[in-house]
Each structure stands twice: as C-alpha cells, then as structure tokens.
Image 1 (cartoon, rainbow, N blue to C red):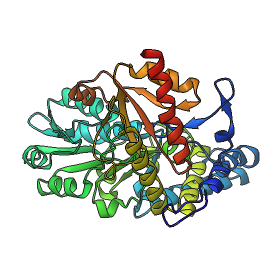
Image 2 (tube, rainbow, N blue to C red):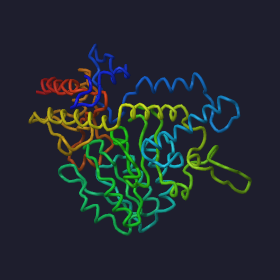
Image 3 (cartoon, rainbow, N blue to C red):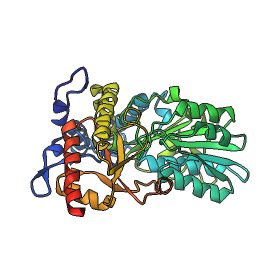
Image 4 (tube, rainbow, N blue to C red):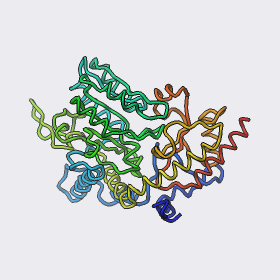
Length: 414
C-alpha cells in the first residue's frame, strides 16, 4: 500500500521493517497484530542499534576513562538530547530515563508528592486514568492526608471540562490526567487543563503513554509541568521510559532513588546530588535501552509524526465504522472521527476474554480485560472489554480480518 493523498504512509515499505508481522500463529494463520496500545512492534533499525551496543561498546557510563565507557557515555547522553527534542523539551536536563510510564509517575509522586502534599491539599485525576496514575496518587494522598478528586467522563467519553473547572480550586496542588485514553480513545485538552491548574498555582502531569507514539507532542505548547511516556509503545524497546519535567521544578525536588551516579559528593556527614538528569538516575542506568529509544525516535521522525497520526486516524475511523455496522457490537468512547488509535468494544452475549481467545485462533491479536482502568469500566457498567489498537504498520485489510473473525465467535456462542 503506497502512500496516497488519503493515506500519507507507504505501509508496505514500513511493514518490511517489522519482520515479526510476517510470522504465522495459531496453526498457520497470518498474524494480525492489533494490540499496539499495550506494546508496539520494534523495527529492525532499533533492534540493530540495541545489539550494536552489546556487540561493540558494552560498558558502564560515567564511570570509566577507557574508550568503551566513553563511547557508551556519549551515546547515552545524546539519547537524552534526542528524546528531549522529540517531545519539545529544552534539553537533556529536562529528560529523565525511567523504566516506563508507571515508574515516571511514581518518581513524581514520591519525589514531589510526599514532600509537597499535606492534609487539606487535593490531587485531581480523571475517571479514565490508567491504574499507574490512579493507584499511585491515591496511595500518596493516603500517606499525607490529601484528598483525591475525579473529573467526570460524560456519556460520549469526553472529560466534563465544566466539572474540571469546579474541581480545580485553590486547594489543588497537582492535576494528573491521561493525554489520550487507552480505552476510550479520547484525546484530552491538555493545554486547557494546564491553564486551569496554573490559574490555581497547581502543577499538572500529562500521561503521554498513548500520545507520544502516534502524534506530534510539544510539552512547551501544552505547558505541562511533567509529562511521561514509555518506549515500548513507540517502536522502542521494553524497560525504558521518559519523564519530562520543567528544569526549575526538577532542581527543587528531592531524588526518588539513592545510590551511585546520582551523587556529586559523599562524605561521612553529608551528600550532594548530581546535575540533572543524572540526579534521578541512580545506579547503572538503562544504557542499551536508552540508546535504542533514541533510534526509535529517529525512526518515527523519519516516517513523520503528522503522517503517522493521519494514518492511524484513517485506520481507526475505518475500524469504528466497520464495527458499528453490527447491532450486537457496543463501542465505547467518542465518535469515529474524534479519537486516538483505539477502539474498545463488546459483542453481546460473548465475554471479552472468550472473544479474544477465538480471535487468537484466527491469528488476530487484541487485548481483553479492564486494560488497567477498573474504575472506568465500573463507570461504563461492564466487567471487561476487548480493545483493538492500531499503529503505523496496520492496514484496512487487517481491520477486515478482525471484523470477519467476529462471525466465528458468533457461530460458537449462538
């Protein structure tokens, strides 16, 4: 499928970079991979960079004068510069590498939250938050006696911004909201939320796990104080994620972890912290993962983030319309033309886990369950849902395979 006016990506050329998409599963079925909101596949270019590190200059960073250590240190430090540029940060001082989005949120919650929140303060979340935000902030609030408030999600899957304005008052110290929902596909108005937070002298954290991979993100335009994301959702390796933070805030915060490399000087009496971002990267860091993540950012920019977003919107809209043809399918979230690359749904009379198992028999890989959003599923009054999620290498033909496979499930349960 060459790039066209309707679809700006040459998907056939892109798929050639992902040999896993050619494999057969389930007794000879061609793999249809539609679980990208959980983890995207990794192109050969990123795999090569990862293996090049171990084959060519595997050494610890910041701790050696020898050549391998110097090469590894330069590549790792430049990876911070690359990811800072990818999300619009000012420089490496504002880009901390973590294991994933979850650890990034925990870093902020413990390093900032435990020191800044107290009884009488409030944290504002939304009803569509991932457990990594929902649970973390609630547990921190319990420790310090703070209140947690939740912005309502309306019947169409959007945040109730009038409710947000009511909740974000002078008692609020932190607003933590997902940029794009991993269930509803809702893309939230982060700049508007940031403005509401800053009007009350509160900070805002944006969860970019489902937005950094598939649309241009500029943290300065969004005016967020923190922004978090995962490498394995953006064509990168597992075990690496990013935390953007405004430099002046990161400098004032205390470290989350203590140990080697995050210190400048240690005596029997005292310790002083290292410069940013190393202040928050204790111990031997995620060297190979960080270098490979920089290559993933290069890969995505070479394809073009605007083109990726346009392609995914086209595929998602097509999937929504195909699924919406059936009376027994209920789709959750905003309309087809106003969502991220996620379609969560249920088929009447078939449990989500059963449906996913039958689709797997036909080579179609989707996610089933609550997608780490149990409170949202409670609000939707469902125990679970199935979720198809799309990326730059997915095609309309794969959507057709998903829809066609639903007939097999209907036959079994009818």
